[in-house]
Length: 80
Image (spheres, rainbow, N blue to C red):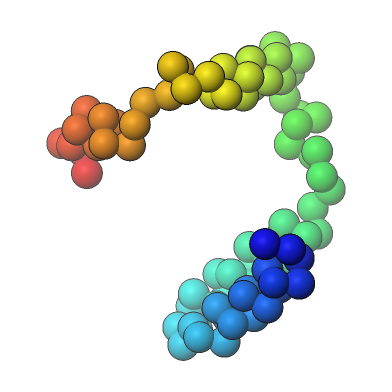
C-alpha cells in the first residue's frame, strides 16, 4: 500500500469513528508521534541496552526463535 492509499484509508477510518474519546486518543497519539524527535528514546538507552535490542531484532528474523500466538495464549491463559 502506498502513502496515498494509506492516507485515504486512514481518513476513511477516522470518518467512520463516532466515538469522541477514541478520536481524541488517536489525535493525541499522532500529535505526539509527529512532534517528537526521532531516535530520542534510542539515545537514552545504554550501549548495552542498544546492543541487546539489536540482537533481539536479529534473533526475531529466525523463525525457530519465534513462539506462536496460540502457544503464548495457552501458556498465559490464567491472566487472560
